[in-house]
Length: 360
Image 1 (tube, rainbow, N blue to C red):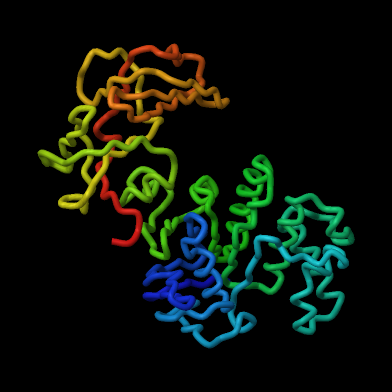
Image 2: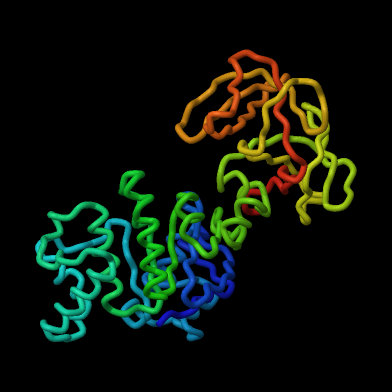
């Protein structure tokens, strides 16, 4: 069983501070939905309001179409996995998993059988009698997930559960979480500040800043077609140029900057607003400084080898910093530091976006 979760014009105030500001979003049944944003943007407050630990100041929250205002956490069809997991160190694994069933009055044999079934589901068969201290970080994550699933929630709420893990284990657990969600069909609502996690796991992502929901879309659209400068620069790296829009035609515009005039896609709501030009480093191409459309003359600076790609930093004649990301495929030719070159970009790959980060 899974349920939809709807936030209808939801706000949350702590004294004079507005943590969540008129958020509207509908999470579909069985969807893996992530709220992505920096610390303090309101994403954890949203999770606490859905789970019932915090009450909204305004608006309505519905789970499975039912208004849950006034219902305590244990009266909602949700399960919350905290960042610190909150496992019981003096209980064996199976008792940790079955704790919620014990509270409900299930007999021991049934609790044990359910725990063993869930351990198989999260790929930890045979671990039922181990103590929590005997498990690795990734195994503890799986036990926390199994414990949450034991009470058969319709909605699973996860508050940055992978943040304490090292990079390799985090990447592995991302795949595991996604696989578990697919197997169970439970609605997952995931909170993270890590854009890699959100893009890799989610069906859709909601990007937040200063309490406001900036954009909701699937990961590809969030990355390739951000709606404003905050989303563009928070989700991935960006080269950013200041300037002004000149001629506009067929969804493109000429953009005049101190480095030259360039052609790029114009966001539909960017007309008349302060705007900047955004180009991702992987869309920058290094070449000879011989002019041409969308070419920025630069002096090559640092060259950083990062394994599967190489980052080339450069400085424009006016002192702006730009970067190009080259694949380490054995074909790319690396420039020398101090060389004069040009960084070029395709107008289809560059975006003129409103320079707004949150509140207008």
